[in-house]
Image (cartoon, rainbow, N blue to C red; front, side, top):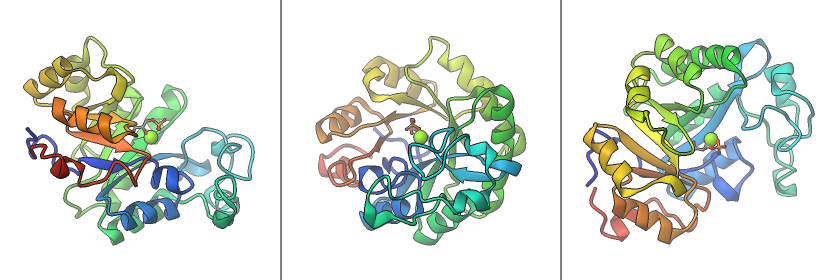
Length: 257
Ligand code: G3P
Ligand code: MG
């Protein structure tokens, strides 16, 4: 049964903005998630040159933009000049790499809750990214309730985020839960563990809940699997298939919460 104190967030969350329906980590993707009825979006944030946070999954530009090379070598204006939509479809030509600030403004304007995933390469970059992104998130969402949830595969980033914005909630991202998940979550002051859905088991859900932590599963792209996970007690799923794994799925299948 969902405990709203443990998980006060949407239970079905759009992955990388608009999932498979729009270029990832763009403003049009966030708008697509909103237009499809989602109440929450996950997106990836990393630092451009001069430590300006932007939305980008990869550490290099080739896959999702018209640029090349490391993201951190270009400043936000240079990134804005790139095309971040054509790789996905001609109709998205001219879509920009958004700043974190612009994505936050859009989410707040649309009433969308955000799971902000902090991306970085190596411990030094991760500490800077955690500090800068958490600090900016705290300023941008100053009055938001619920506040955005910061998550990262990097424990250095989460530790720095905690230092910079202790009041913002945090979650540790992993593929599979490590044996010492409890100690790690406590040490980082995290409220949830985010696991690859194939690694989630009923005993893990029960142990996390017993210890007071939430559990999010990613990426969950089939309705049947989402229902299974909710029946196990998973608090939330992140999905790319926004037209199949619908925000009202738990209610539709009579899953408590
Ligand atoms: O936050 C869940 C998921 O986004 C982690 O994987 O590679 O899509 O950022 P990735
Ligand atoms: Mg992500």
